[in-house]
Length: 420
Image (cartoon, rainbow, N blue to C red; front, side):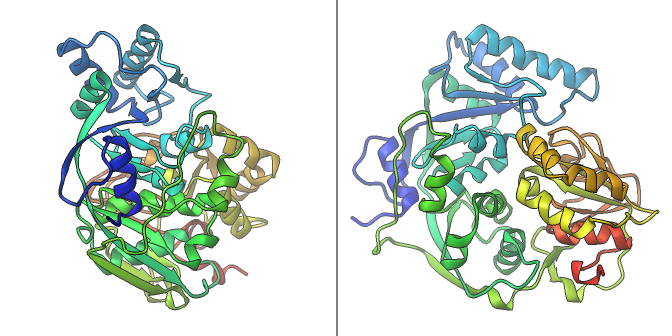
């Protein structure tokens, strides 16, 4: 029977030769991740349910990245719960502040997600890991606790939609624009509990950073997972990172999809998602005059070195508008260090921005960039729901790093083409 890449990975992890969409299965996990927001509840349930030892101390991953460096006493206590549990359980993959980054970028960077894996995380953007040809999906904290005890999780095999992208990208159009355009096309529930399989020549030419961005926002269309078949780009990325075996899976030519969507990217310009949905997108030429108070460049969506380079290219030799504040957060310490070596951090600081340590921070209205009533932000993050980055009366516009940087200079949502 022909299967998709997602079905093949799931079949291999539940001991079956084949699985079919809609089938309920018990799946063995390769990665079981929690963070400082979600894992404390998992730890509580783990102990309430009689858990003594986690199923595999090398497969459990604990990442304090949301409210770290700790913003208050409560967040410090949350992190302390993780720290104590990691020591008690001898968790190999616990990473302390200063040596940790935003989980969805940090795990691939450290070789903790590899092709063919089943990655389960108590965070909705765990789907980012599909960029490496893994099945990666988010679950609730109680599901994670059960997984830590048993090493397994129950899943319904998702049906798949194939997205094929061809053509030639316009200047300043990035993976962020492609996924925003796609979500704008199908809606925030257009892939509800489905697998979004990204393919085509455009995807093949994307770096891992671009692929991570694509898969990261699959959940904004309601998807169970986003996934890209591994290729030479994938293998080049993991060759020095992989410290265990991995498996390459590919969709069969006769695999069943409930829909195949084709896009000519030549027609796509840089996109901006208006409040209060990631699907509420417009091309940059349709924006009009929208003044901004804050620009945020970072997050698991656009905090890569590649993203920082794009922003720095726009900002070099320029100053941020006097009525705008710009916050830049590299996704991991490694990215921060490389940006420092390349002079990108200097560009941001000389422009009048502030650079913070690797953390989720402003993305979820956590800290280091919370919006006040009536304020407007342009953000390279993944969600612009009501109150997402602060006050319920604030507004968030989602965009790529080039638009974010140009907006910081102009004081309004702007195209990098306007920066002379």
